Image (cartoon, rainbow, N blue to C red; front, side):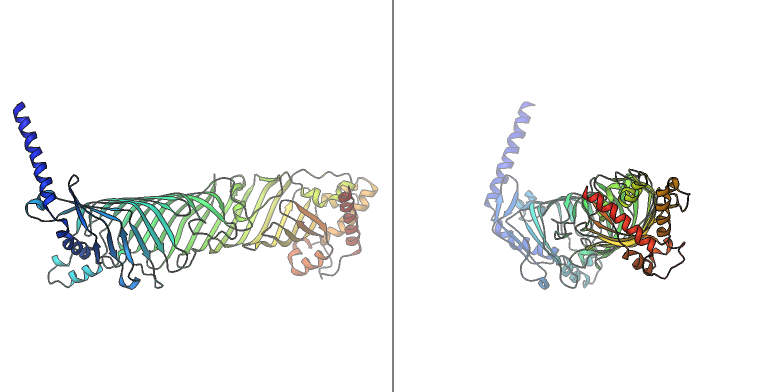
Length: 566
């Protein structure tokens, strides 16, 4: 038995020596024309190889360079170029019959150029088209199939993809690695691809590709799992950095393409997301769940059953998008009813909502019906928003508006209890505009007006304030009827608040300031915004404020002035 094993080992060694010797006697360059023609017919492109070498130990043919030509419509530069190519071959057919059977392809450090013309066509779309056309003209069905090209293994290491769309800046993907098995043009095959995204981020794509659509490779079916980590929206070119918008995304989605429509369903975790120039980055991650479809040839798509938010509060998102421009264009609807305010706190800064310093909203519910249109980094968001039964903790609107209350011995609450607030908003790169805007504040009264916040946070609002009857009760009713001075002040307040007290809101969103403004009364009543606050007035002509209004203005201005001096 020992002799048999020894004999087998010796025989095996002799075969290896003979095989190696046979390979050394073969001039690999004799096969170069055959390899170039075979690859060229399969790809429908001109293939050029450099000098071939035989690798004895790996049983392969190595080329010192490879060049795959581009579609002539896109110029004469190489579509794929690489410094080296390794071809795995079947050893015995090569030795005994000098027949070349390629089993694997390995490209090292290749560069791939993906180009799109102004008509939306890609340079890779015609891969295999010439071969398919020649096969289609054949007399029998069997010859009309895609070229019989297949390899057991395809590997790409340390590659680079340069992508240039018809509009917009070029994008690069580096450290590209591709692994695919049983690769052929006539059937689906498994693959795995990874890459680093220039500007920030990485991707991993695993799934099946094929059968190859030789007439238009864009239509090739794909079924895969896509994961993207740390995608920087600005660095990747999806947003511009001029307005400070941006964010970092982690994407986990399943994609499937058939008949030119790419469907995807999954989720996005967004960090430091900022969608409008007047906003700030979200303080904690936001979750986006979505289902989308994209027409590969048309460059447009739709989003259905989307949800954006944090915790238990999610905004419903649906609409369309257009990827034909330099930046992706959106036309989306964002809506929700009775959404818990506490869970929406991280979302407010993203849309430019800034609260006074050291304050926060607590409790209550939010309702909205917004439309977001425009490029991703310059969205215009508009529509109605309402807030119910919420408390603005750490900010007393009564103290800001009612310096006069302290004269009557009334202490304003430390927080602002909002029974109901509503506004029609327009959020744009220029800031936020609200017209009309109204609120019903407990222990204070009602407000109505219009105005806005600039990108830098500066406020400019004109408001009418109608005090609660409990504060401005005429005669002896109300809180001001406890003293002679209080009754006198209550009479002034009551008469003025029938029409509304004009207030100008300035300062910044984080530090708002309030100033009595008699001119606001006529202007807002004339525009119809103060109609709800003017129901008890006998004069709705929009005339100048009455004597009582002037007296109240002077009184409030005096109080505010004295407070400022102290």
